[in-house]
Image (cartoon, rainbow, N blue to C red; front, side, top):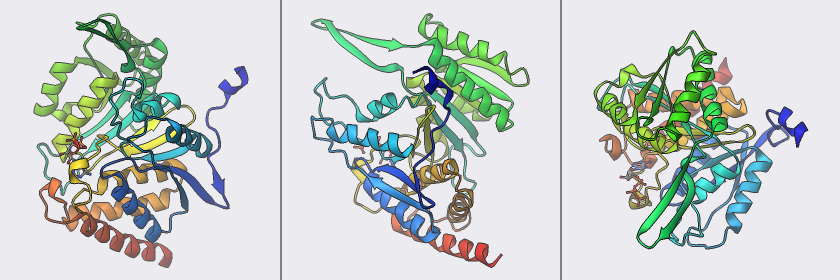
Length: 357
Ligand code: ATP
């Protein structure tokens, strides 16, 4: 509809000053991580109500999924864990991909910033990954053309390459970052990655104050592990983004720390940055609660609840950098609950101080 194009953001659902947000706990450690978010929000007095939707991973029907998507459309905002797809039936698609595609969440942003108190392979890393989130290798167009021969289509479009590049350059401009790097394999995939690269070069022309370079994905992986400090903002197609975000998260503390943000023109969905299910560590009180809490903080900033977000951010920084209360994935001995309780203690102290002022 031509008039719809003019709307940039729909109002988010809000009732009597409270925000409504769709919560999809997903599988593995998702439900326990969500319970920590709710607990921290309770002590932080956060005015958010969750509409919780469980998606059954064994189900062949997409009824839950459709309901979840409707709910995000209605609320405008969602927070999610990783939703498992156990069925190998080719008719049952990944629910995670379906959500991103149906809501046109064309960009995924993972801000990979080191915590001074967490020892990783590298210190002081501060890279923003801007990943195309809906096409490329995730087009889910695969078929067996003849027995023993499978073809899989990688789809790159000018429109989506441009949207993601523009997002990255706008981000750099707003956040005072001086350099954007496009990651690709255009020497081999000349048409697809070639278009992605060419589009980002064209967009770069509109941002003369920002340096733009490009790097082939294989060299990029080597550069990342040897000298990650050369990168500020990175743009890349979908699959490289999945791999590179895991590489960088691994460099600075693993899957349990960082969050990822998914944006389209109308909706936003927040989740842990590396999108793990963590089935093997579920129910053991050892999963790191930080990644999902960071996702919830991203969501609070997005909703404009800045003071609540600031308090929880400070509480996490104190817990990780000063108290050094770390779960086993960070080589600590604390349980998930130890971390959450320490955060809550800080949230309570910080909130009291805010009120005194
Ligand atoms: P599974 O979901 O069956 O565990 P997997 O081996 O692919 O499958 P992922 O869920 O992808 O594991 O997670 C990758 C690794 O990161 C695992 O070792 C997992 O335990 C770890 N991990 C993921 N999330 C967290 C977290 N929040 N805290 C601690 N470790 C985590």
